[in-house]
Amino acid sequence: MKKCETCEALFSPYRKTSKYCSKRCKRIAKANREKARNETICVVCKTAFYPNRTKGQKAAKYCSSKCFGVGRQVPRVGKVYKGGYVWLWCPEHPISRAGHNRRPEHRLVMEKILGRFLDKSEIVHHINGIKDDNRPENLMIVTNKTHMMATSTHRNRAEIAEEFIQTQGLWEVFLKYKDVF
Image (cartoon, rainbow, N blue to C red; front, side, top):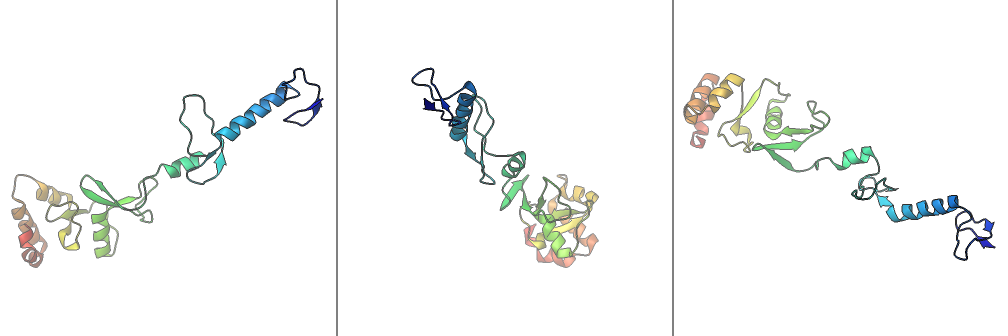
């Protein structure tokens, strides 16, 4: 008589090398060995799990779809450059929504200066044309029409800025930063 390695029941082996009392116990033992071999730790929540995979598939890193979503997010720190503009992570901003928690830094700077949130129709223009220069003195709010005029290639940038500043009553600011143009 032998003791089954799975259920620990006594059985009379059919061969000398038999370890299990039935095919069911043999399947259970095989599954347990596979689980022990394939036990993986989730990258996000650090819990142990057994990934469902077939031959040829990559090893799973996440235990659930929730952890997969968290693990695939872009890092939440630092600056990101998109199209030359600096974008900052700020999920607490009221305009932020799921999946779009970054805001352009120049808009955040202007909101801080004004003490209110900007409308979608308000455009923050970089006076010197450098998109990542977000100093308060280099930013101004313009309308879409004015911004189109300011960024057109048909006219000299200094002419456009001078005309705009005169019409907005900001001549002192222009004289202060005239060397930028």
